[in-house]
Length: 263
Image 1: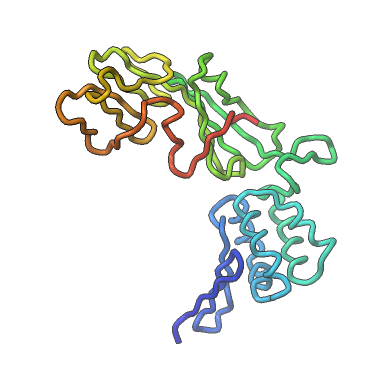
Image 2: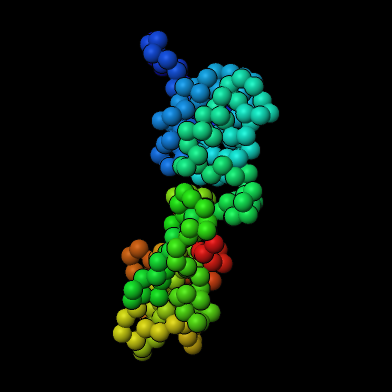
């Protein structure tokens, strides 16, 4: 008999063709918290997947917890529920306390007065106008370094992009200065967090006059504008874009704009 799969809330519950038990897979299994849950609490997860009173209120929470979001309300279910939900919450709280965020909110405070935000370690690039951070397991008080627009440049042309799940454990964030090479006689080219001959901080460049002889093109976090008295055409890999400015250059796929990377 072929295997069958049923989608239950946030988990995929697989029913194998042979009586080897059932395995409930969940989002975030490869991340720090999720890997610990899979290693230490998988039997509890499987039991919850097969228990209708547990799966309806637990599996979406499990997905969020495993991906590095606060698990406190879920893990504390040991005192407010019974059965499979309680057993799974107890296992996470006891076996994965160091890998999972057991706070109830990413901005709440612990009983000792310390922040329960994750640890964020940052570093500045030694030569480029760029800095980056990674969120790790641990308390925010142990964070190292900083990465904010002011750490990159005194100009207003710095933008920061972070993983959509920032600051969950394992996510990243970067701040970079928008710079342009305006030494070209018939145009300019700009990019984020770069340097080179003729490059300086800039608010960007745009079409010249007359506008019909100009075209701006973008690819990733780079763009350029050039004068073409023939047929305007972007080079391979670039697409026609509005004026080449920091506001027009989006964060990479899977990233979002943030005001700072530091805690």
